[in-house]
Length: 292
Image 1 (cartoon, helix red, strand yellow):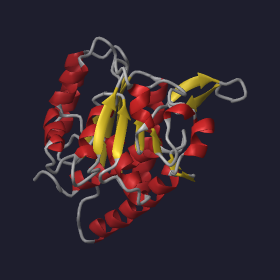
Image 2: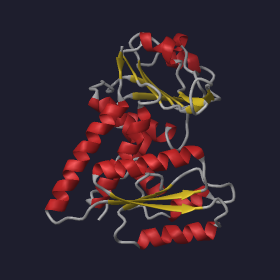
Image 3: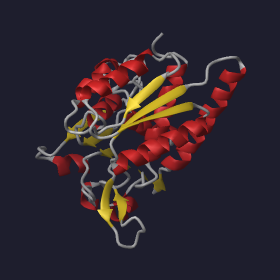
Image 4: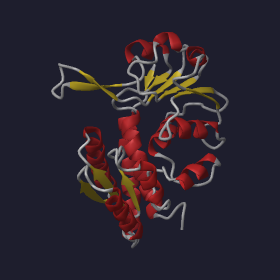
């Protein structure tokens, strides 16, 4: 069993990006600039955004953090998006989700200029990704594809089961694993209504678990030699930790790991790659790689 170390991989990629940025600036080019909009004080979002700012520093990017209280109106947030769309110094920006209930998330996503949508959530980027055109791919699926490639894990022709059908992970992951230039695999998507979920998993060469239920994938669902990618990050109470909780994945790691050829840990697997992918997208935005 080999552990897929997302933390080390992300560190290596950020160093590669920093080197490229150094060259761009040395040649008179513009330093990439990522902006993040944070609404309210959600604990998970605070951590994510803090890590994004640190990643920008590591990559040599300029970063801007715009904060609003949770009672901001939809109109005010849309005005902020419009301002960032028009700001020529900002190459890419994200509005951290989830947003407060009174704000229509989809409306905000669609208001973002797709050429600056480094989260890859805008329908134009989602549509382009679905048919294999150059675009910003949402960060978690891009991070997973990058990990599989970096570890030389064979995906072509393999049976891949994806647990979960969210717009952020499940659906784009299925699209990418199906496509020739990325996964080239035979893909099955299972979710809470799937009646043969366990049977599907037992036949899978690769399982990507993004269902949001701690320890959902158990040893009896995994065949020997399978590759397991665990996207789950649920906070579960843990009195032995200073914070009072620990992060738990969707996979019963202790019992599943011995059966695998490769497995991602939680934390330290997919998480660091998500932020690293956002950096890759920001660099591409700065270089106008996909959209002029």
